[in-house]
Structures are given as structure tokens and as C-alpha cells.
Length: 201
Length: 201
DNA sequence: TTTTTTACCGACTGGCCAGTCTATAAATAG
DNA sequence: CTATTTATAGACTGGCCAGTCGGTAAAAAA
Image (cartoon, rainbow over all chains, first blue to last red; front, side):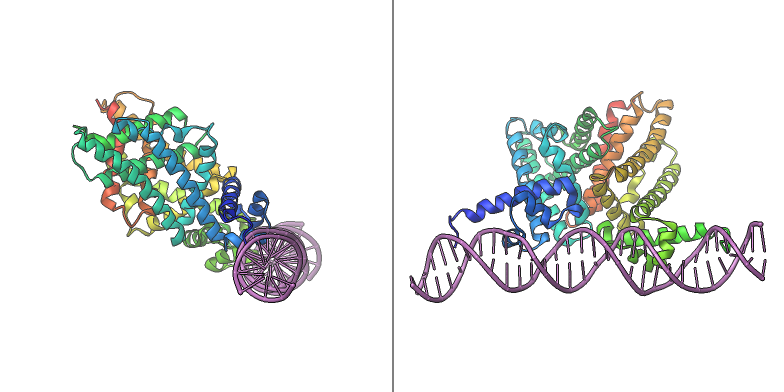
């Protein structure tokens, strides 16, 4: 019987933290259950008690990461009044000093590669995309209400915006040597304005 | 001694073909040397004779794939006269019926994820990016000569264009269920025109 | 108190797989 | 002809690792 009722929650959070850390450091292919155990300060038995298989654990870790990024995205957007400013508020994606960012990319890249070969992981990827699209759609809709933008297929445009963000982000991350932060910021603004310009009032 | 002098070339091509096939099907993480042996119709000893380690083999396979795509890109671009048309000639990236395309994305995604954790693979990724950037830069320079575009930092703009392409491409591939070919074509044209519009004469 | 359930431990197993090693055949060089 | 080198085969090994299993301790239920 659980010594305290919140134990399960505590342990799961502890394991997800450890998983996040390990997965970002060693990559999905290089991460062992034992690695995660060690990072979490739990034995294998303890770990497996909460997450039955490696895949279940990894999936939970990916979801945890995306939840955090999602929260942060929503928070940052909400600091701006104008929908267009909200849509263009993703400068923080290109901040090398931010550990969540620096560590996040390997995770995203790993998930994309897993998603290419495994339907379950692909669904997680789709969830992630859909969440992002929803956030952006809300801003677009507000802008249409306010007559800043003409009517449009909001979902499609939101998909375009998020695809542009993601393309520039992964490129910026993998091409460190040649792609500067400034390049990334300029490119995403121009790219997204290109996507939006047909609908500017 | 080799029975025929071209044997090495033949075998290497044979192995690369097999590697390409296996790697795209099973992914980098799921591919065994034995898998590649079987696909190539060679024994392990035979395979290792030509590619000493798994990493060397995989790297060669990635390079082979990129060479093919590069050739195809150059060929397709050369069919257009106007530089802008050349730059926008990448419709073929979004063709599900094309096996090279359908099979290529998993490979690219795998390399990106490997590149996030391994410097050697990251260098291959950079080569790939640089090749693409060179192709696009050439078109941009021609356009500037022809006064279609104002002067610009050609390399930077080429990087932007290729990042937009890649973002939309991976998104389109992983989000099959919701992202149509038409969406991809529309988005890339708008995104790239956004990147280019500040320099349109 | 006894029994059951939960939380956790860590040794162990079975399977997989990269790379090694021995063998062989054939070609060539000397 | 003999020695050497190359091309290939495939058995084998050593290490790794996911998941299992038999435990223990403690809480709670009976």
C-alpha cells in the first residue's frame, strides 16, 4: 500500500524528469532503461512498476516535453496583445542559452525519426503538431475578428506557420556552424509574413 | 586478386543499393548488418570487406542518397530558364507516388536524429545542406545578374529557402493524415516568396 | 493478528548483434 | 610451380540490454 497517496504522482514526475534528461543527452537510440533508473535514483523494478515498457516510458517522456513547450508557447503568446505579434512571438526557440531549447531539439529530432518508422510515435508527433496548430489558429481567428486579416482557412495557414517554424528551427539547430540566431529570426519572420501576406487587410 | 578490375565498384554499388533499401525500410535503429547482407546477397565477411563498420556503411548510404537527390535537383532546376522558376521547381518533393521520395524521408529524418547526437553524422548533414545551398545560390546569383532580384546575401537567402523547403517537407511527410500535397505546394511557394520579396526588383 | 496489496529491489536470462576469426578458392606475381 | 594477396563465406564470441522473477518491507484490510 502506498505510504502516501501522492506517491505515484511524485515517482512518475521523478521518472519523467530523469527520462527527459537522459533522452536528451543520449538520444532515444542510446538510452538504456538502466540509464533512466540511475538518473531517477530508482531500481529497474521500481521503474518498471510505473512504466511497463521502454516504449511506454519514452512516449510519456515525449508527451511531457511537449506539454512543457506547449505551456511555454501559450504563456509567451499571451504576453502580446496583437495576434500578429503573438504569432511572431517565437524568438525563444532560437536561444542557445536556454537549456530547455538546447536540450529540446535532440528530443524532437529523435521523435521525428521514430515517427517515420513507427505509427505510435507518429501519433505523438501528430498530437504535437495539432496542439501547435490550435494555438496559432486561435491567434489567427482573433485577427480575423479584428479585421486585421481577411478570412482564410485558419487551420491550413496555422499548419503552414508551424511548419515554417519547425523547418527553420531544426535547420538552425543542426547547422550551428553556419546558421546564426539572427538568420533564424529574419528567416522565420519573412517566411511567415509570406504565408500571411495574401490575407493581410 | 580481383577477378575483374571493376569488381570493387560493382560490389560497393550493390551494397549501397541494399543499404539504401534496408535503411529506408527499417530505419537506422532497426537495421542490422545481417539485414544488409541479405539484401545485398553477400555474406557478412563480404560486406565487412568493403565497409569496415556499421557507421562507415551508414555514412556511405546517406551520402549515396544525397548524391542522387542532388543530381535530381540539379537536373530539374536546369529544365527551367528563369532563376525564380528554378528556385520554385521542387514540386517533386511532395509526390507520394515517387518511391525515391517516399523512401527518402525516413532516411533524412534518421540522419537528422543521428546528427543531433553524433558529430560525424552532423557533418554529413552539413554537407547536404551546403550542397543544396550552393544549388540555390547559383540561381539567386543569376537572378541578380539579370536584375530580377536586388543584391543580397545570397548564401543566407539560399539557406532560408532550403530551410523552408525542408520544414514543409518533413511536416508534410509526418503529417500525412492532415497535410495535403496541395497544402505543401501552396505553403512552400508563399514561404519562399516571403523570403524573396524584400529583394524583388 | 493474519492476510493481502503495493512499492521497490537487483540478480538473472534469453535474445540480439557488431565485429572477429578461420577457412577457402581463385587470381596473380615471382 | 609457389607464395601472396584478394574476395568471400559463415561460425562464433562477447557484450549489451529489455524485461522477468523471486524476493522484502511496510501499509492496510480483515
